[in-house]
Length: 175
Image 1 (cartoon, rainbow, N blue to C red):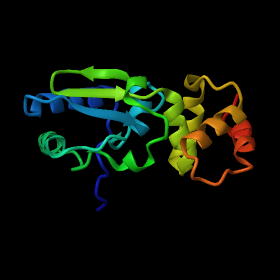
Image 2: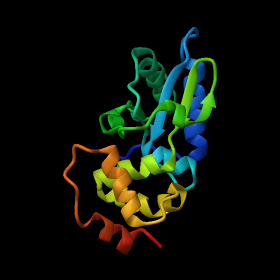
Image 3: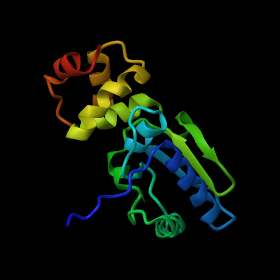
């Protein structure tokens, strides 16, 4: 018998769990999350669902504990909300560039401009990330593959440039 995989989170479920997380947090401080990855795509109807909600801001102990409460109530994966993407935060992205998705006294959930999510996915180039590039492209404002590659290289200047990346984008993403 196969074990079921993680519960998939669609747009409405993500919003409901984040609102529930907000209510579960202790009063007195507004916690901040900058949401990226599959959750960003699901919230923009670019993907049907995701397995988790990735943040590029580190989660403190209160956020982790409250997220664990929400997970227990809904039989979610323990790390349905995580900061695994924090180590891949693009250089140049600042919270004041982000748009609020949820702004409550206890929780502020921010979304970065789509071009930063695109850069993160282009940088990692895992199979799931490459599939996300095509639906993300129209939201980025990039006019050419070279522009997108130059932006990604600026976000990750420590990486060796890939001379074939613009060709890949022209062939598989830019329409």
